[in-house]
Image (cartoon, rainbow, N blue to C red; front, side, top):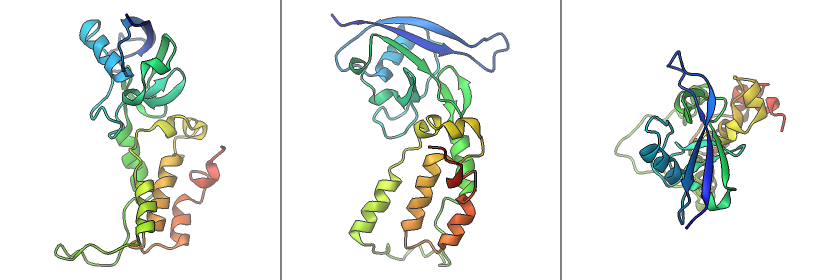
Length: 209
């Protein structure tokens, strides 16, 4: 028999005029290899079907299930309950628009920042659908791949004090994205072009870390 886990979960529906922010307690028996994603699904299936949270891939690929777990942003699908105490508090990620309970709208924020930093390859070449893919040095391709692995879960943004205080701050994920294009030889932008986009208090000079 596993531990008896106590979950303190933030509840609030901003679309319901009668809803008030509060914490709700749920109790659940722990099972082997249980993740927070599994626990939340069990709570929703057996105790409260109205509980809102986001998920998709269940494998740490989509970034949908980001939330604040005992005060630290993380992914529910990657967090084992066995690594946590028997009392677990869950809150929605700050910075992003709250949709309900643990569900937030990260997509609008990332689209806005993506447009702001012009998150696409700038080139004068006309697109040729029949052209072969350009060759790239393996080491450079690996460096770009590592920067491209960001799943836009929003955890680094939620953990950033500057992003929580200043809504125009682009955050670590956007600076990482700029580094990805800076390394890409297919992008024609100069260092001055990148500086124009992030060289101010809303970019690299706004970081207080």
